[in-house]
Length: 79
Image (cartoon, rainbow, N blue to C red):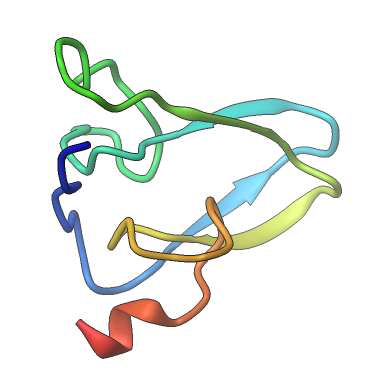
């Protein structure tokens, strides 16, 4: 599998709605970071579908190296 592009070395603060489905970009090429816009097409990547557990602010990973995708786990500090 190919390596993802590091979209940013900081998490994206986003507002999520409880029970709503989202698609997190795993390739790093999306223009709508941290969400997927289909830029992965033709690659080894696919977006990660997730449902927000609660309404509120969340820090989503943009370095694409998190071990807790789609959420930031601080891995960007080691890049």
